Image 1 (cartoon, rainbow, N blue to C red):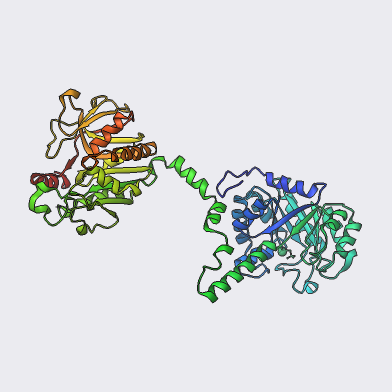
Image 2 (image 1 turned 120 degrees about the vertical axis):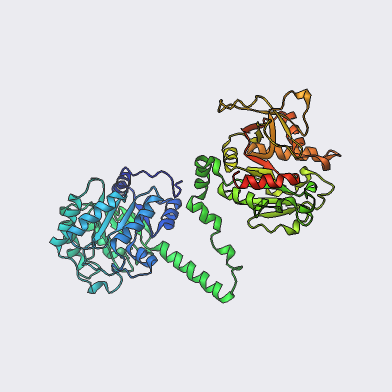
Length: 550
Ligand code: SPV
Ligand code: MG
């Protein structure tokens, strides 16, 4: 099934499809559509073609069927209709919007938009709908109309494009002889098919015409007024194509009037909800799922990641500075840490930010975040806080401590990394100033800074150095990324660790070690400095220097 943005065959096959409908030995049917969505619905119903009705298209613009909409406005709408469908469109081209020259330009534009064909009627521009005073409408001069058909045919690039000549002689009350004479002249001028129109409520004059016409060219009819005629009659008469010319616009007008009336009177929408299309139905018609798939394919690393910030602790070592606020609300060069974090996130299109607060949570007034509360922050640890944000878990998320300052590229590089779980490790062990627990990271390889694109895995994180593991490769900075499979691993690990009696004391390094022990690959992104965390009073001055670029 076509979606709005599927690959459209623009190689001219639609004109061939329409020609096949006209020339098929069976009676074929096309249904009116007047915009993209109605065209799509017509195709979904199973129709092999679409009638782009002048009446319906003018009506959906809210204007009269008297060439009030310009022909380019019509062609623009056709482009939407054709883009979302694979079946051919036959345009109701009225009188060709002018003389032979306008007709030439019209067919060229229609070909360019992969429209199957056009039907023109032998009236005078600006035309009026045949059912409004049909008898009083002047007919075109036969020669002039034949010139228009010829000009249309001569300007075609694609020989399959169909030009159908519509005979209005019966509508105008000129009788069968005139209708036949005109049809024959249009045939001789090169028309591919004849549309014979009637405003009678019975098909008599159409049947009489068909009998005399004897299939000299395929015959097209529009049974709007003689709608009660059994279709079999048309089949027996040798008609090639039936146009159901206005039923989609009429159905939608009826539905819209009923719906608007009811909503207005009831001042409520509850009673119409089950009688109208769901919003999901609209999404389906628009091909929204195709866009989602395309985003997965083309915006792989930029799927609006989420961030979870662990910010429950007071930061006791900061003494008075955190008396009345948690550490994340500590002002560094005039701006709270959390505000700085949010600004870094925004630069990476991370707009969903969940902050797990605890100590003095009520003082957190940073905009653009969602707060979760770990009310037992005093007696519980990091994993308990993380658990408070489990409902905000996402297939592409960062988890980090709230007391971090870092250069923007670190976040960018982390988001670009392909691993399912990636931890950021600072390999600059000698130079780094260490205030809190160092979180030493032991990795599969040391940071050989000249080698890129190496996969490095975490083997262990220890809050203090562990000689058993050899030389640490660096320090985990308190930031990780979790994606796709990684999210599943994380949720399973949390569920398992929760069963342990010491869960309340477990830390993020405990979680990462558990994952490593369960055989999961935790990737390492090495950095070399360019970050700090804030644990003691001395860090505040260093942080201020850091933000000022010193
Ligand atoms: C249309 O659908 O605009 C037509 C057919 O031209 S009719 O309205 O029956 O004339
Ligand atoms: Mg029309």
